[in-house]
Amino acid sequence: MNPNLLFDFTVNKENKTIHVKREFNAELKLVWKAWTTAEILDQWWGPAPWRAETKLMDFRPGGYWLYAMVSPEGEKHWSRLNYLNIETEKSFTSKDGFSDENGVMNPDFPQNMWENQFIDQKEKTLVSMVLRFDSLEDLETIIAMGFKEGFTAGMNQLDVVLENLKS
Amino acid sequence: MKRDIFQAIADPTRRAILTLIALHAMTPNALAEHFDMSRQAVSKHLRVLQESELIKAEQQGREIYYQLEIEKMKEIDKWLEQFRKIWEKRFDQLDQYLSQVQKQNNEK
Image 1 (cartoon, rainbow over the protein chains, first blue to last red):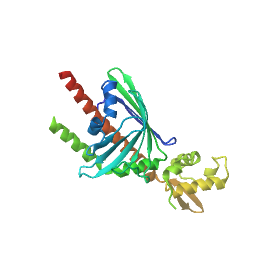
Image 2: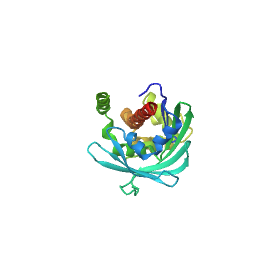
Image 3: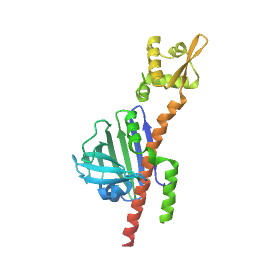
């Protein structure tokens, strides 16, 4: 991670919110595009070794993004993110949850509310996100569902090695 | 009965109890002195905490002492840390994408 870019992650257990702030070394227009365009989301949304694969993207209020998180073994977990409000190049709010491949929401899993703000800082862009959930246990379910295997220290190191081989 | 730990820590009195016994094990009576409520009410909170396995009771002579289950408290932080790592990873990948695009644009 670039040490010159702000990364702030705070958990408020009492209010059941998580605040994430992150700076990106690019202008607002490009950062906004990266968060709202399927072809670009597919390149970064899946935390390695998982990858995201979009089936449908309809970025407008009332529209949704249907995608799968694909494991290295090819196992797919479908998610659907519903867009609620959009203010172009400023903010969008969304609600996400697990679904099937047709975008039918799975009622057994919690849905989370996201508020994303994009703040212009000339050459840099600050993205500020607030995640609200009904209980901390909800979040635990989400983590247990798809990402448990991918985040061991070993995997992270492997990624670094692969990256070095590529360059 | 096993309870949701997050329901347990959602209550301010129970959080205060956890803070108190984090310092040292305490009897229900000693704990009750810190709160403006009946001993029964304090006992009820202790029961919720015990059912969620955040604290455990230990008999010492004629008294019962409550103490913190440190491992259980660590669990909460452990998975929040995982969640943080997911985002760290995503953002690093987005950084890579952004720098690639900018490089391509500059070469044009």
